Length: 416
Image (cartoon, rainbow, N blue to C red; front, top):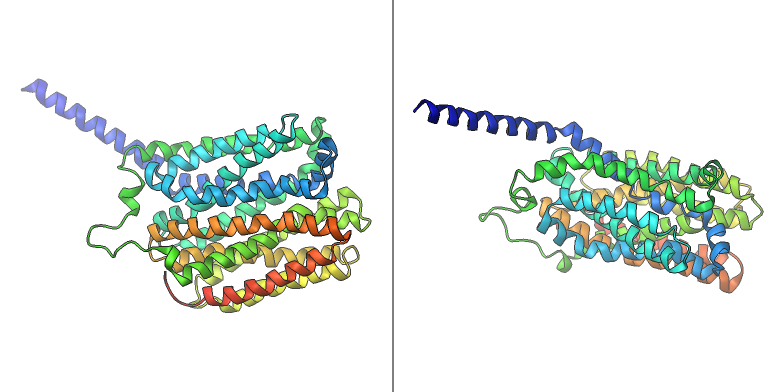
């Protein structure tokens, strides 16, 4: 009997220790650190390319259209990867998939450095797929773990995402010079950030092993309402189209903003700094807009504000690209950051629960990024055909008008 009592006490102590370790691993502060570090990686691998695209093109002898594929291929696979992300999240759990995505991102960045155009594009496929998984699963995870602070947490992770892009864009050319390895060393450096984020995310993977999986926390109980088919919802399509159109105008700038400035006589280093400034200013809109949106029943005024700012900035690039470069970069930055924050917040606000948020996020980012992938490629093709940036910029202004229309519908106080 004493042996049995001792054994039971040992089991209780072991269980208590395991529970304590799990409680530590599940601490909100650790989760917040993991979210921020993962978010920092969501644009780094894309933004670090733009200041170096001329050198990359020269190294492989790429045309303007082929050069645009360096950015368009990852964006295309942001859409393709988003298609399977909700299923992977339900099957393996959001924590495990996010961890795997960060490892895949690190590998994809390194593959792009191989001396082959095929590897350049193949690495872009891996990078785009990895970022897609991060993009899609993050809103659902935030809706699940921070249900009362979803808008505020969206503000945090969107700001971190843009901050990462800012640092990557600003340091692309300096890193190239400091590391002495050309554009390959500059791009390859960012695989370290992905690896660090994966290590920081590991505690969430370990604690996830102690529960039944993502479904246990995200799927409604038997008495809950029937699952929503977001693909048949008009509101879901409005959110999706706004996501896609604002992504399109952003990725055109990510791919071509430094080139637009350098084609008008600005030196490459200055163009890279202004591009980085554009990314830095985006943090203002990305942080403020979700916070404000979460306190409003209808987000229509914010839709008008952010689309108008982006349209004004693009118009400025058309009439005075070099003379007003800093000002237009700031106007565009606030509008871009506010728009992406608005798009991600609409996913959270229009979804009634975590499962719907994940489905809506998957739909919005699948269709949205497939649409956005057309942007850099079409802009490059139009530029190559006309020899000027007039027609590509006019086309983006039309995109702004369309985004305003669908955004006003998506911003109504309704739920999918």
